[in-house]
Image (cartoon, rainbow, N blue to C red; front, side, top):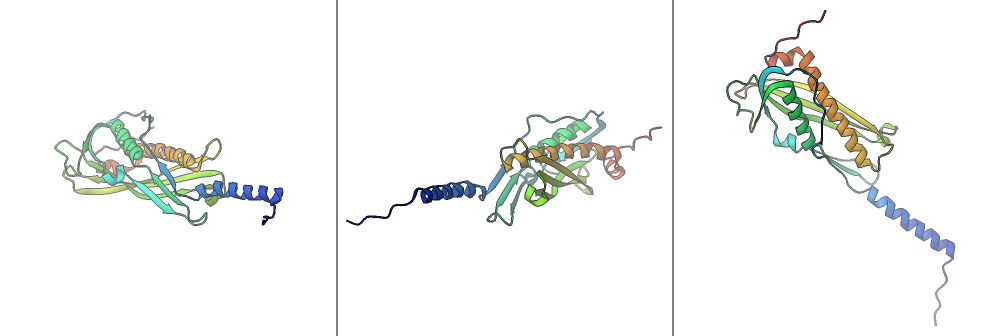
Length: 218
């Protein structure tokens, strides 16, 4: 009878540890998916609505916006970040608070009489950074938004762009996906604040929308 050599206990423990390490690392190298849903609540701005009615057309690609990136290192880690539903929600709620009336349109040319302008939001650029990128224990999100301003008949008037930024520390978050989700919510809040400040301060935007410039405060 052939006897197999006995494996020392130390070697068996080493093999078990290696297998455990592989099991831990393999999921981390797989695709990372961050699926953002509509927010339960979003702070409305404490401002008096402007006395005009505008149209709002949210393109399908904006309402379902998804960013995909394959990053170097970590076996080519892939990230898919979907922020369409909450950003569409934020723009609709914010503009609804900033104007006396907002008509949601199926197309930018579907506006009727009485609209001062038609607003069409879009994403011009999206970036995110992980702690490995910044060498700091934070996750960061940048979204460059583009507001297309059109006449009620759909003719282009101009474009107004601004950047929303959000970051969050890694503390108390269970995963990278949760950290990216939290940073995105901060960026969306920043987008809402930028909309308010733009309507208050940007003369081009107010001109395109047919809004009078605010009087200078003494």
